[in-house]
Length: 248
Image: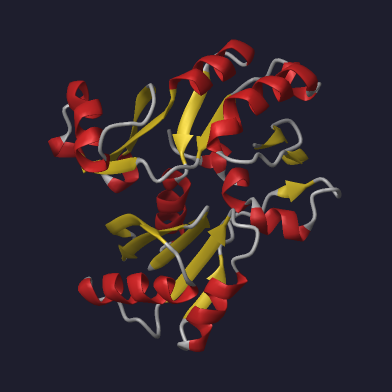
């Protein structure tokens, strides 16, 4: 679990903390201990947003969504959940679609008891909205053995999907196939990347070995950070720092 505090008075990120867990099965027990011991997580805040990182999501065009069937649609695309979950629906008006995702219900109840009125956001939202706002043709996001790919043409949303990555060459395989399918030029399009993985260097080196144009994902307006939040941390937690800018 990682969190940052954004001071809206001075428009500055003043704190970043990161707590590594052993896996999702430890998340609830670990979070419960942290919420009781971390002094900042006991404070009241003007706004609270939580980004859930998971491949369990799907997107639906605006005209096709019946919100009463959101849970059924998510199950149809992702299969039955392994535990009790709460399904969320987020409207992305700039992309003319809805993002459906689910979070373990025990975690939702735990965090809501500590910090009320949480706005839950799936990690795919800043991936897609960030790409659209900067008119980047391709955006990649790496996390826990997965790679998210978002494609745009002239700021118009084309495609989003999450792929399991078992080896560095998998990245090029999935990316080249999708870009060819949508007629996005493989060797000239700008490809922005970010990720939560501890070491995404092998993935990037594989893409560079194929002469692809790789650039780091950066916001249009660079925020101000506390001196303790180093450049390496800003890169690793890029989408966490973009969270407060999500449209909904």
